[in-house]
Image (tube, rainbow, N blue to C red; front, side, top):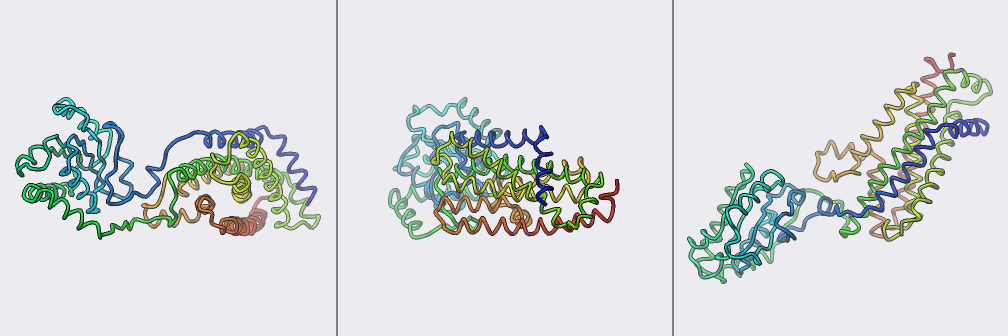
Length: 417
């Protein structure tokens, strides 16, 4: 077996493409870990019952409705107790997600037709929401219901059926606010104070800060690049096995008393060395990154990279041996990388997808490695044990199927030169 491993590693080291993937993917992963971006809007659970403050009237609100909420963008030039009460009343109901732009610094005639038309076009074509609402400075206490209604303009930018309900809620609020004034506003606030809005759309059960969510997203992208390298490095090891079996090498190895499982294990050991080499390159690259930027201990991060390498390298090796053709193996390897990264949630959250997609996601190793990343961020001591158990489970299945695959292919064509 030692001779098989040495021969396989020598052949691998002669491949330029092997060195390309071995060195390139750690560099790309390091670059993505160095890039600073905010993905917390797409990944964090929104807090129900709160008015979301926007920094500018040009800020988009589309990414804040991940749970299917009815999105409302409010241009608030009133800034009064009545306008505050209306927005909090809508947000507290749990039916709407209210995003407000503070326009109180704009002059009283700032809502010109040109301003409204420009932002209506932006809201309708470049953003996604239910309605946009413009609150004028006259939306204040002491006005009649008709005067309050004249100080608010509602524009539908979708065909959502909930728009009618929203208009009814606003009319109801305006009517009672005009009749009762601040007494009604205070009463409405007190009525919602004792209620809790609960989202049943789904959650991971762990509370991460915005910074930790950004770290998790970056680690996920790093996983995507690294698995690309592991998949193709593993498939290069499979190329060697394919050529050996096509050229009758496996037949001669079999005559020495080496079983199919032992032969596959020798190739798996080559994958083990590949994972060590790639992790070492990643370790060198991450020296330019502090642990604060990683969000976790460097050793744990490199351990996850190494274990991912074992899993995906062995999966690629198994697929290559099972298919028995170089081109088919390459296509299969690329497909494995694409679909596993997509379905595991490395690129975007899958919390609100169908149950079928969630079942498929649970079969992807990266999904569980992301779960372990969350556990590490929240200082859960079970993370290391979970990593080892997940890796052992995948490797046990792959090694068993790999030995079986060699036997099946041997019965057809392998070893027949």
